[in-house]
Amino acid sequence: MSGPACTCWRDSVNEHQLVFGPIASRRLGRSLGINNVPSKTCTYSCIYCQLGAAPPQIERAVFYPPERIAEAVKKRVEEVLEEGGQIDYLTFVPSGEPTLDAGLGPAIKEVGSCRIPVAVITNGSLLWQREVRRALYPADWVSLKVDAVSESCWRRLNRPHRRLDREQMGRGMKRFASRYGGTLATETMLVAGVNDDRAELSRIADAVAALQPAASYLSVPLRPPAVSGVSPPSEETLTAAHQMFAQRGLAVEFLVQEEEQRLSRWGSAAQGVMGTVAVHPLREEEILHLLDGYGAGWQVMECLLQEGQVKKICYGGSTFYVKTLTGQRKN
Image (cartoon, rainbow, N blue to C red):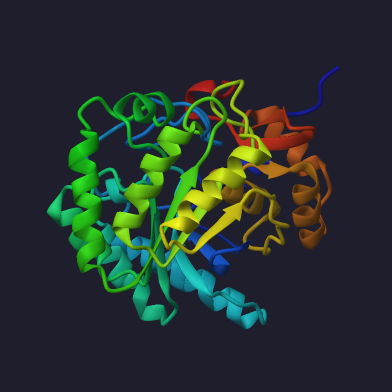
């Protein structure tokens, strides 16, 4: 016999959490995440995406008013500082592509009043648009994605919107890099059998070097991907990639191990879980640590699972919990 429906938890979870964290980031320290676009609103549908597959989009829109984003950020910053916590960056790293937000520029300026550096993690696919480049200039730290250079590899790996043009996108990245005054970084996700052959790695290293970033990061799939069979390259291949980047004078670093997550308490226990899994699948032990901070038990997760808000996935020998896409939820 089934128990009663967990509607009490549904009432405490917003459909869209504008801020989450802060969480630990090897690149940015203690990062407060800003989720400025709806879930899976992206120009890509990468085969390795940890949020699942969805049709790519290309039309920009103001999804949430910049002042509403700023209000949510400022409120959370005050809470963290009052609790004696630390925030090193305010990071636009949503469950999609942040530059699809036509209000991104004003939002960056609004949250900048918190006097905490602002970061944006983008795939760079819209930087051929002048207004997108201008929106990003005020940010203190920007990361661009360079996963592939050849047309066939790009379309197989990133599965971009059909109207995107790889060469046009590359030119946009170069224009942005040449004028950007903040700290520029790049990230390259390497997937076995897709973009890890020597010829493609050489092309990627050349493209990254042309941007002259302060840091270049090489990453591999660590959490459940959108497409089954996606896996990291061999250690030999990763070493070869590192050497190619270093030979071009790049400051290259691996992001190939899970970072220990110490998630900060905010809102209700259900809100804390949902706000994070919306953009970052969590291992079971990470959720247990988060719930312990609220003095809450596993029944919170049981309720969210029963409602279809989250689902369980096994990957790489670990159990993860991810946000269920709207169309897959239980009625």
